[in-house]
Each structure stands twice: as C-alpha cells, then as structure tokens.
Length: 366
Image (cartoon, rainbow, N blue to C red; front, side, top):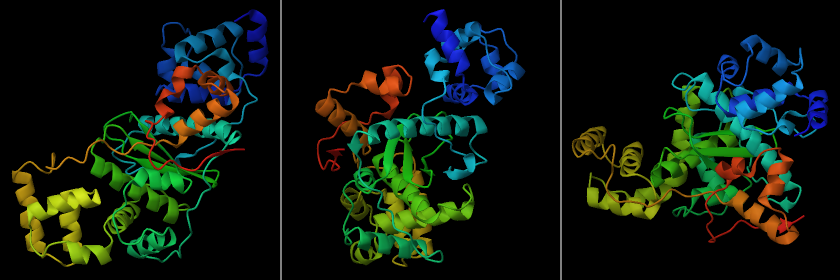
C-alpha cells in the first residue's frame, strides 16, 4: 500500500476498529504492544483505541502486520456493531475469563457485520421469536413455543435448522478455551444470534445447547446474563422443549432400562443422562432410582462417553447458503464479501457453516 493511501487511512483512523482487531486476536493491550514489529507502550495502544491520539502511517502499517488485517480495516466509514458484555448470555462469568468472553464478543460483532452485508442482498428468514408473559414457567414457554411453531409433541429432527428457519443466526465456532460454552445474544434488539462451540462435539449436547440458548433469546432478553437461576431455567426449558411431557409420559420407562433409554436417545436426539433426569423430574422414576442410575452410568464411564452414537453435531448452513445464493445470482464472490468488511477472504472461514442440502431455509434475492 502506498504512502498516500496510508495517509488517507490515518485521516480516517477509527480506534474502535483497532480495538476490534486486537480483541479478535485475543490480545491484551500490553500483549499487542510487545509484538516484535511494534515499538509501542500499552498506554499508546490505549490512546489510539480511545481516539486520544492517532498512529503514524508507519505505525498503522505495523499494526496491520501484527494483527493480520489490511490497513483499511482501521478506517472509519463502515457500519459497526456494538455489543456490551451484559448483553451476551455466557453460561458462567466466574468460570470463563474476561479475555475469552471479550474475544467471543468480537467474533459475534464481526459476524453481525457479515450478516449486515449479506442482508442487503439476500432476504434472510424473518425473526419469529414470540414474547411470553414474564411469569411464565420454562415448561409453559416450551409448550407454548412448540404450539406456536406447529411442532406437535414429536421429536425435533434438527434444532439448528429450526432456529435458522425462525430467523436466528446460528454459527459454530472454535471456542477460545475449553471453559467457554455456547452463548447467545440479540444485536440491536433486532437480530438473535446463537454461537455453538466446536469443542463440545457430541450431537446430543449440541442440540441441548441450542435449545438452552433459545430460551435465553425468548425469555431473558432484558435479564442480566450469568445468573445461575437463569441458567437453571434455560436447562428446564431445553428439557421440556426437546422432551415434551405429553410424549415422555407415554415413552419413558418406570425403571432404569438402559436398552429403552438407548432407543429413546436415537429417537429424540438427547442424551441418556437427560432422559433419565427427565424421567425423575416427571415423577416416572424415584429419586433413589435416579441416583442409582447415575451411579451406574459413572461406573460404566457413560458420564463421559455414552453408548449410541448420534453422529456429527448439527451444522448451521444459513450463512453459507446466503453467500452461495448471492454468488450465483449476482456473480458476487467471497473476496467481494471480505472486501466489504475489510478483511482477507480467509478470515470468513470460521463463519461458513458446513453445507447440507436438506431442509434448506427459504431464501430469495432482495
């Protein structure tokens, strides 16, 4: 890049973009300052990010190299997305580091920019998440949502596809650490997002995670994230939504029968541990039967690796299909999309879900 272009970027330099690039890399200000190509202090980085001072053209070039983004990424003029930490439903604020949560939020902010670019070219499914009375129980919300969405009392074949059809943007990303679970948020109170993590690789857990986050989106939009009571409610909803009481009372056994539980796992796409817990919560087995059953699972090492493989976790596809539709209809390439968010095309790879041609969400060109 020539000096004149760097001078233009310097005039348009936006410190929030520097902060976003740093957070996407999971770096503290002090760690960025220590990168070999830079000769800066953490306070200088802070001044650039806050807008107190503006880096030289040479420093912009060095920051570009250190963070792996083109210099134009730092320029103002593109729509930005703000996402405060108290607007993201992380499972636990105590067991996850602030660094990991910050990096995860930065990823969602970039994802929202990508969705914004695609939404100008593709009509994505409309958001269809109803509101419920604040005092509704998780079980009542599960029953009501199944009724509103016409799901009946049968198994849900694909939780991720269900969310995408109702306007939720779902993505599966590498977690910054093993401590970070799935999480969810609303962007500008208009678009809901669910992030599933690749390190939680079992299909049944992924489905439960998706249902758990659905409850946060429906019932906890204005609640403070991280509260254990809210997490318990989300778990109760996920169990009731994936294993509806009307069906479970007819299908669950009245004793711990592993063969029966294995068959139900295949039918309902939930873990045997979730099924035996559901049987206890519905009063179909006693607390003592449940306790002995869980002890037996531990002895068999089923708490870590259950029998009956459900295959690969469900994969999001909405964004991939949107990109493919734009590319087909208007000769729009991934390079074009990357240019609109001022990143190399490779930076979009984490946001391209695996392609699955069955039960595609309905998309049409705007």
